[in-house]
Length: 118
Image 1 (cartoon, rainbow, N blue to C red):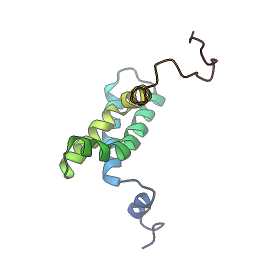
Image 2 (image 1 turned 120 degrees about the vertical axis):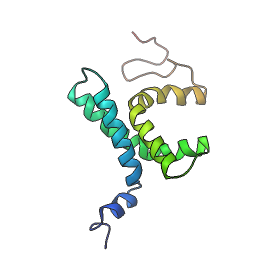
Image 3 (image 1 turned 180 degrees about the horizontal axis):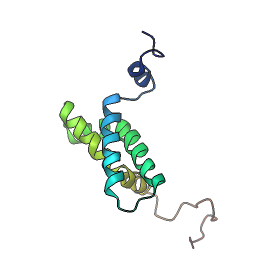
C-alpha cells in the first residue's frame, strides 16, 4: 500500500503521529466545550491548535519529564490539547526570556524600534 492509499502512512510521512493527534484533538475538544460563551471560531481554533500542539510538544514533554509508555504519552497529549491555547499565547514570552530578550524590546509591526507600545 502506498502512502496515498494508507492514511496512517501518509500522516507519518508528514511527521504527524496519529495517536498524538487523537489525544490532542480530544483535549482541544474538551477545552472548546469547557470555555463558556466561546465563539465558534475560537472553539475550532482550540481543537486545531490542541491537535497540532500535541503532535509536536508531547515528545519533548515526555522526554523532559522522563515518562514514557502509551498511557503517559496519551495523557500528555490530552493535557497539551486542553492547554494548547494558553501554551501558544505564553510561548513567545517564554522563548524570549530564555534568549535573554527583554519584554517589549522587540518592535512589533505597528511600532518603531525603541518606541513604547500604546
